[in-house]
Image 1 (cartoon, rainbow, N blue to C red):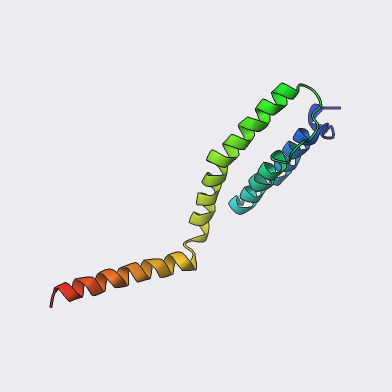
Image 2: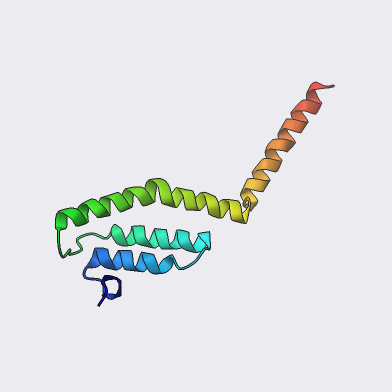
Length: 109
């Protein structure tokens, strides 16, 4: 049986397996959900590991750091760009513009 057709052997393998399934899309919001679920799975305490525990710990640490510092912020930005600004962002922008216009008109008098 090929390596990729085998069932997950431990919690780390299971987390990676679930993450890979979540990547069967091009939708950035769904990819972000898969990344967040992967991070949550990796951060579960006291999971047993088969094989080289040191290598598993190193891999887990690298994945968590990459997800938190690079991949999740990147995907969040892509999702924001796809969906456009939120209602609060639009309202805040209008308030700032309104204040600057009223200050400018007050100076001209």
